[in-house]
Amino acid sequence: DVQLVESGGGAVQVGGSLRLSCAASGFNFNEYPLAWFRQAPGKEREGLACISNLPGRIFYADSVKGRFTISRDNAKNTVYLQMNSLKPEDTAVYYCATIEMFYGNSYNLYEACPHADHWGKGTLVTVSA
Image (cartoon, rainbow, N blue to C red; front, side):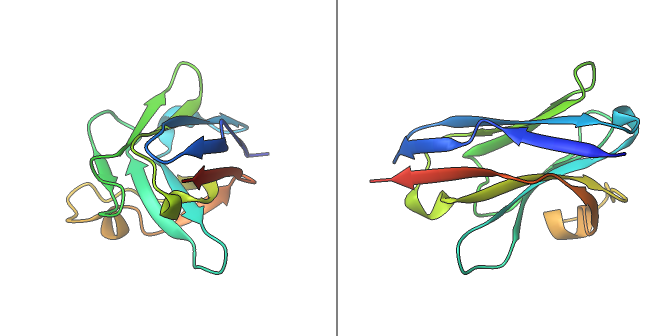
């Protein structure tokens, strides 16, 4: 079975940093694009970043561009989200997901990674002033 387990969430002050990890198992990690999403209370789930299975293609949502960095370590079957300059509006549950198909010649995140098919259970990030 596909399993995705997020970790690294917690409470942090405005301007701080966190690094989220997502450990994957049950599938050939090297063959799958991956993404990070979040869902804040009372809001819809939001795509943040996605990364191709092969190195070099990454897309970000405008809301996190320049502050968040997605990366993957295929040897460790893990995808990461480094989050810097955190704001109160970054408070949410953060999820990683596998992406069904990665469209590298896209203009934005939503065109590049339109469909996620397996999800982790999430990790909570709380940013306070």
